[in-house]
Image 1 (cartoon, one colour):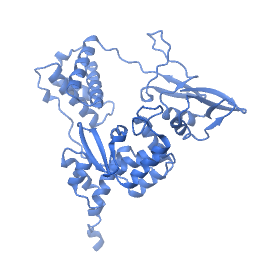
Image 2 (tube, rainbow, N blue to C red):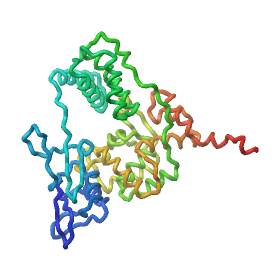
Image 3 (cartoon, rainbow, N blue to C red):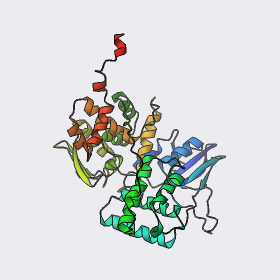
Image 4 (tube, one colour):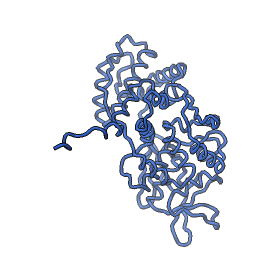
Amino acid sequence: MQASKLVHRNEKRIKIDFPFNQEIVSELRQIPNTRWSKTHKAWHIPDSDEAIELLLMLFPKINIGWAEKSVNKESADTTLLKKDINNISIEVIDKRIIVKMPVKKEIPDEIASHLIDFRKWMEHKRYSPSTIETYTDAVRIFLLFVLPKTAQEIVPDDMVKFVNGYIIKNHLSYAYQNQFVNGAKLFFREVIKSRMDVEKFERPRPQHKLPNVLSKEEVKAILEALVNQKHRTMLSLIYACGLRRSELLYLKFDSIDSKRGLLIIRNAKGNKDRVVSISEKIIEMLREYYKMYKPKEWLFEGQFVGTQYSEQSLMSVLKQALAKTNIKKPVSLHWLRHSYATHLLEAGTDLRFIQELLGHKSSKTTEIYTHVSTKSLKNIKSPFDDM
């Protein structure tokens, strides 16, 4: 997929070249004032900062023909590497895109070898791909931070220094710190076979945050703001079945048992399978979606046939919907799952059933929704009302 400058009818435009694909066309038309040119036989968008920003958000791997190529000072390679948009710095100056690639710290051979061994061990234990990536990256950052110390020389106090000098300094979250500690414990216990007491790698004190919940009216507004059938079906399914983002993207056709009214979620968090009820309303929506898009492998495919829809594109779908509503909250996809659970609880569904539907290992995780349910709270009368 290629973007290039174009002057069409005395107007500066950006031409988008790609092999015809209805999915790409549908995504592209989310950009305001997108048009088809019979003369150039291509779609084109406005040459504006806003259009360029949205283009990059929708198609992070697009080849920007006029982008300034960035090069590592120590390398003669002037190829603009196709990286995910989250890993590059993008500036728009005088309507030109300046792409700056990050300079990565070189990894010593010893650390690289340790990381390979750690990855192999986790693969052997059948950890999920996302967990493998998260833990490997966490250990890499930690080992680079403590250099010139080797992995065998590290002591628990080094983790304290790392938390203070890296995590807290960069204002990273409690959850992020937990991931580092979890990854480090596994690495030193199972790969390095260290005699150090890894339990002295202490996790941060637990936070007790309430889940973010939308009202039914807000959920409806978000879903109705989506004109694209595929986009509306994806977000509707997340809310209607309380799915995690990854669970939606890994769905296939055999995940839907329309006769029994069930959605089968395979290899979810913790490598667990579960089933949730799926209404006839959602099944009918899925049928309409299938007639329009006819996906081949995954239930929701990306720009090209047989490829998974990306997490980043899914997040951009939600962002587009929110932009068309009056909702000013920092809504994320997980808010839809929280809202599903809370609305079930308010409708009188037993917590034990909600736990099964969400795939929670512990009932304590599900109990957080009792703190945000308005059903019981509304029945409590404030003493102020009797004054």
